[in-house]
Image (cartoon, rainbow, N blue to C red):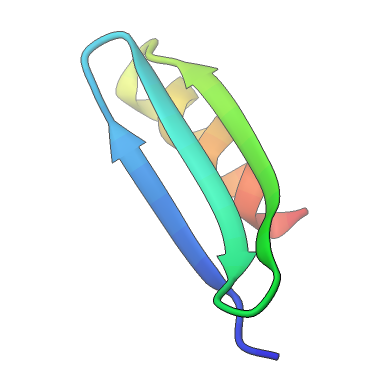
Length: 49
């Protein structure tokens, strides 16, 4: 099964998701926007888990 990742980046939050075409969303996370290092570390941690 092929999984896809997506990021919607805004000024106050990032919304991250993982899913597949056949089974829909498997996991999502809302990450508040902080410093670039903190925000991207949280995004990377979501996709690594």
